[in-house]
Length: 374
Ligand SMILES: Cc1cc2nc3c(=O)[nH]c(=O)nc-3n(C[C@H](O)[C@H](O)[C@H](O)COP(=O)(O)OP(=O)(O)OC[C@H]3O[C@@H](n4cnc5c(N)ncnc54)[C@H](O)[C@@H]3O)c2cc1C
Figure 1 (tube, rainbow, N blue to C red):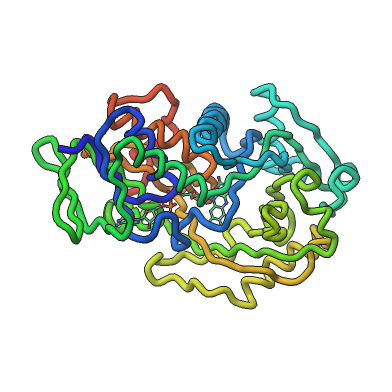
Figure 2: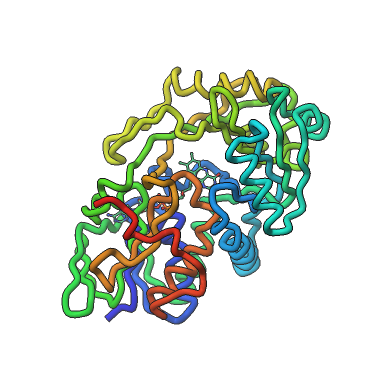
């Protein structure tokens, strides 16, 4: 009998597999596509990590622990995974992200600078925000390399004995007699705990969550900057800017991939991940070019790449990390609502805590499944 089966080996599932295996648990981790792949939520070369967490005060202790675990993973894997660039949260002085970032910095004693728009441009010339915008610059923000993070978690988990299988789709599961049976094309596997980390597909294997978790199509655009020196690591922090036409988020050029930008909730397209339009169109580019022309004109060069990706939104955009209601053997981690990747390392730790110890020292009360509409 296995200690745990992990359903879905993307950002969260790979971290869960590692933390479970590192504690000596027997683990089978099942992924329907390649590991990693570009059909879910964890591809595209870069994800923002930042301490100035404006979404809710509960996230700051978790992101601190996530940083420590990412650094430990880097050391174990012998590979750079986290690149520090600094982070900028900008927008109207009284806007939610500026106020929240300022409050998170004050409450957690985080070093930061508050800059008006002109001062931001003097310090980081790639930025040209509206004249009345205010920016909170926090120097610890940076970039995670998502595909490399997944591969590192998986390869270390395998080294500790985890059985991690690609092209192994979970077809269904049932709990009975204190164990969980998981059905795949190869047969039925049985474990004490099932950990569901199926991202945008969570609703298809946990039907009661299908209403609450809404997959949404996103698009990322990479351009060749006209002034490349303004968009390199060291000269250009990652950003989330609440501005007309936005909000936009983005990254300096990493590994010569170009300046990268996305619009949060892109065109508000709720989709089925199995039938989503994965091609990128002129209208997708127009939305993102508009942001570049207005706020980063020196990045307005040739298009290098465009890719689709998926958010999975919960109703309040906070995560869901909990036992499934009524199921004491089934854990779910989902609904990461476009801001989850930075937390994968600590979510893996939390899932291992819950699966093996029945509880966790981390405060996850914000992420309760009971709050969701059914
Ligand atoms: C464009 C974009 C930009 C983002 N930017 C940021 C950012 O800057 N910072 C940040 O912190 N977050 C960001 N996010 C959010 C973050 O990437 C996600 O919250 C995170 O990747 C979610 O990880 P996951 O493990 O839940 O999903 P995934 O990584 O998609 O993993 C789910 C896995 O489950 C597998 N699966 C599904 N069903 C089955 C099944 N039946 N059997 C087996 N396997 C199955 C899938 O194939 C997939 O591999 C961004 C997201 C997008 C789309």
